[in-house]
Length: 303
Length: 312
Image (tube, rainbow over all chains, first blue to last red; front, top):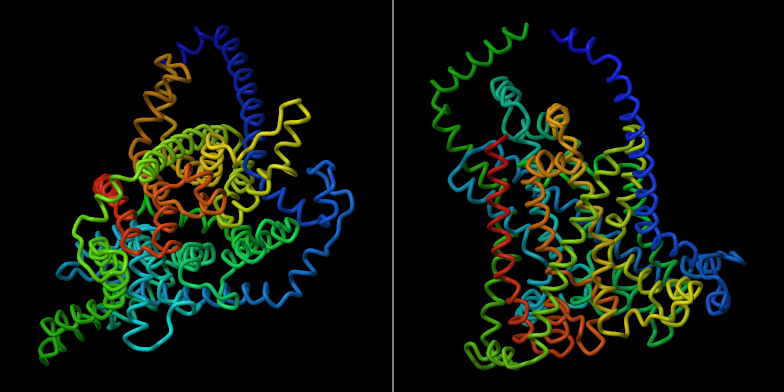
């Protein structure tokens, strides 16, 4: 039946095939053309950062072609990387992000394990609550949190406002819900037989978690870690509200508030600072792109 | 060998049950264990998310010095302010326009990436996702510099075509366009990635069947792609609506709400009123106006996500 049809349609099919492949070739060319256009749109700002960071202030204020570097110089990088202030921002950002990542993992992995495997009273409600918490934006909570910190400070005498370490308590509110949510998804996808076998072999719940779940769900764990790091590295509103002294600032706030002095914009240094600030997430992304994308899509496709 | 181990385990289990530290005990242990494993999470959510959210409702009912209860005083005050209505309008324009163009660009670019041979896709995807990876505070600084009125790279390029200098951030209409443009630039890659993942999950047979039925490319998108991606489109759009509606970084760095509060949205206006002008209750009231739209979006997302969970 089918061979007959092919025989009959033989000559016509050949022509059709040729035109289809020509269509296909044109579709491909158009795809590449538009992809190049969109890539230009998406990559112009980061490339412009690189271009500007290689210019001296004199070249920036001269009316030359802004898209080209005529006298490349690394002076902006040298200046920033030897400035104690900038290194302080970098250090604050690093320590905050690292501690927040660890705290996030310590909270969300055990919780996700309990929510995925140990059905207990209210576990379904709690899982939904975790997801809803993830949808609560920082711009809704910064004012009450600011007031709360001020009140706690008055009550206990512990300085909380204008100290970088307060961010260690605040950032997990942004990272833990999402990390818990995607870890629930990853843990739930592990076959039940695996942990049943472990329990039968006499493993305790904690052993099941550390010996079975964490190794098996390692890709998810990496994705969650990357997410927690990127979020805490990029967070801008909370540090802007809670910290003001120069030595307490993290990178995003430090660059925007100290390098912009009044109306004098030292663009060479601002762009260099922004580029150096964007470097850690970009480097992680370059090496762990697949995990990064897995984490990005996990929120909606898993769980 | 494995069977023997399992048998051994079972035997061990039953002997343990007979000894009294058995099933009942284990169940109790399990629930206490679960409680301790989730306790930090519960504490975190209760103390640093739930409590502040309720506290913000309380704050919104106080006067500026936070000594006196004024009920809905802050809200009625806001309703009488023209600036506030401007903020409401601008927030809606900003969020809806930005999300629409993010979704549109993401959808189109996802198709282009899907079209090209598989071995090149990874490279393109990697390049196109860069805006989403850079912290928005940093990339917005680059945009600020691109928009700079006197040395701006954009105005330089436009002047080559004889188009006069555009006051990107000083003119109200252009400033509104600029904040939306930067938001679209930042958010479109997220849609691209989500749609690309969704496109890959549409079975090829459906397109083949459509082709046999004589469907053209537009009909294929309308009758095959869109219905198959409907759920992911809904979730992504609603999610992005929440994030965009609550956006702070981009507007703050680009215009700080200016010129004359024309680009002010809820988050930046709450910051201006609550932190910079030190009127915490009024700031809390402003940010509470985000709750209704966030709640509606959240309910729909939850419905879609659980529907997705049931399907799989």
